[in-house]
Length: 237
Image (tube, rainbow, N blue to C red):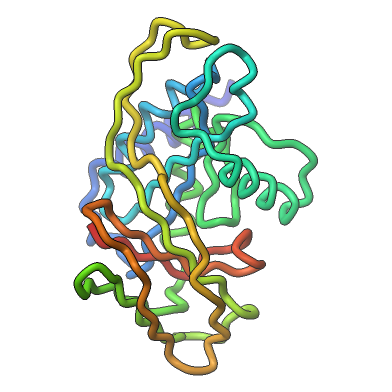
């Protein structure tokens, strides 16, 4: 084993969570999507690590529970076929034949096994150093959120504008399946994801979307029909 690589990875992990965010802030938060399931025995460690990611100010952490573990004996209370469909779309874009849990997809472009923190942090760090290509702001107006964006560079085709709502924290006592008897607290559980439209970047974007209630709002601007690189993201809590 190359212990120098292990040390380097561990040091990067410590620095990621200890260093001030502003020191490496490029104005472009990194979106991390965790595909997980209450019925997956390999997922709890990734779910636990995800709490740390969710607290990091330049990371937008979104937990998407899939439904293909439900047949094992426990139906995931957060699972949605739409989340499984999104994961499959990522696999198709990346020309992969399989999907798995726990999987973290970083900025819609790279996937990492979710219970390997050092690998996850390495990819996040690489993405947060990328130049900002879109400037986007979100504001609330009553029960609506107003999205405003303008390109800072040439964009790779039209971007899909997506609105996401999530529940910051929820605890579940799992009674059956591979995690039977465990009580797990999940962070940033996605409860809604919908497309608001397309934007080609030829002119500034301004649109309003219904977003009532207290749940945080995330807006993603993503290429390849919503299954490619996330060019911009913002959160309104």
